[in-house]
Image 1 (spheres, rainbow, N blue to C red):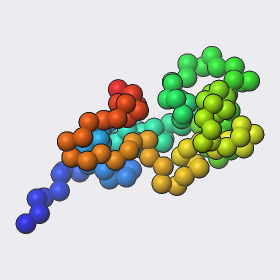
Image 2 (cartoon, rainbow, N blue to C red; image 1 turned 120 degrees about the vertical axis):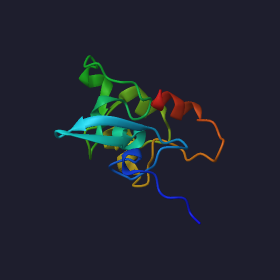
Image 3 (cartoon, one colour; image 1 turned 60 degrees about the vertical axis):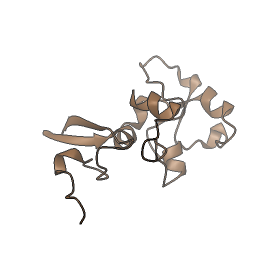
Length: 125
C-alpha cells in the first residue's frame, strides 16, 4: 500500500515537487497570496537577479560592457562567465542554460542519502 501524498502545502506551486531529497521549498507572497516554490522554480522565475552560470547575485553595479543578456529571457550573465565556459555558445548568441535546454534544472537529481554537490549547496545556501 502506498503512503498518502504529502499535504498540498509541502509541494511547489509551479512544478509540484515535494519536500525532501534536494528539494527545498520557499514561502513567498505572490500576487496577494502565499505561494511555495522549490529552489529550482524560484530561480527560474527570477532570471535577471543573478548570473545563471556562477550564481552571483547582482547588486545593480555591473557595467553593461561586462554583461550579456539572454536572447530569450531576462537572464543576465557575466561576459567573463560565458567566454570562460567552453560549453556555452559564443557571446553574440548567448542563451542562458535554462533557455538552451528545455530539461534544464539548477539541481542535479540526488539518490537517497547522497549529500548535495557543491554547486547545489551554493545555490540553496
